[in-house]
Length: 180
Image (cartoon, rainbow, N blue to C red; front, side, top):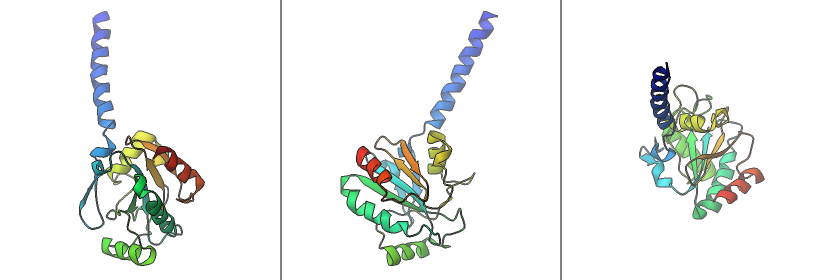
């Protein structure tokens, strides 16, 4: 009986180890396509603070683009990356990357990094969002457009913020300044 328990324990240890290593994939191992079609390697953002925001052109929160640009202008030299992730997961985004890019540049003078139009929820969500959920829980899953995920310099989810929390709110700015 003792041999069975020891064998079972050893087997469980091996299964547990492999499950942990799969869930612990580093944020910096992930990549995403930019709005221009190039590959964004998140490893290029090591030792930076990253604010990931799923965006949409036709959303009531679209004016938050202004605040995101303000954050980028104010904190990029201190190590903040604002990463806009246009998404049609909530059926409020333009149909092509070129339309999104033009909309952002013309209406908000956006010059922070934008990705290609990307799924952010459900089984088709991009691996960044699946990683965030696996490592931080359900609060990392966007419930609407302009959901924010703050990644610290160690590549971990520091916090998440709902759509109605403005990017320039004291809550977000204080946290960014704390971890920069």
